[in-house]
Length: 92
Image (cartoon, rainbow, N blue to C red):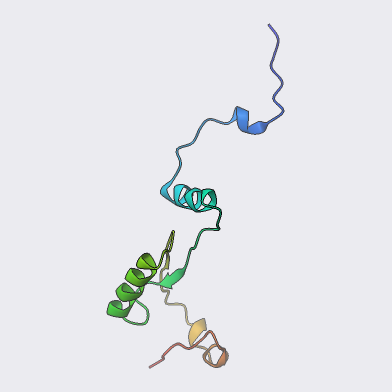
């Protein structure tokens, strides 16, 4: 009995189910474009505005929408972060 020599490691891996994320990215790539994956912070700046933005991104053609979870770490409230262009957080 002779052992088969695999030149492609993917031949040796079991087939994994394709996730919804992989399917959406693959569909965009098959259409000849990169996937559009915008990011939103959950509930920011308000809950109502967050859902409006989600709806707009969906209607606007986002393939996947990544939602970040806010955290309670103190470093974003530091003085240097509030001065940074990306750090426009409202602090009490």
